[in-house]
Image (tube, rainbow, N blue to C red; front, side):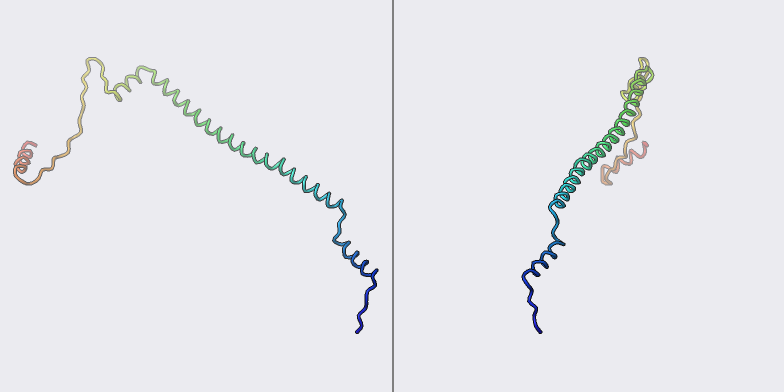
Length: 136
């Protein structure tokens, strides 16, 4: 078997042909860079402000709900104030909360029953228990 020797010109041609498949012109690399920069710029210009817009829209909806609750509570309190400005309501609050009576009326307080006293079974307490049982 005899090895074939390449001529110097053949080797250069073969290397040039192999390099052509991987070698790209400088203009192509520039265009890829421009497209990549434009894509990053487009994301920065649209995605981040869009996210802020959606967050602000959510905050506005939450604030509107909160405002609605406060408005309803304010209306309820306004009607309560209007009711408290009547003589009948003032009298009712004075009687219930402050236990006031009109002149000439008598006020009575009914006390809750007291708990029965527990006395030991030793002298003299057994005599006291017997006396309380005959009175009751």
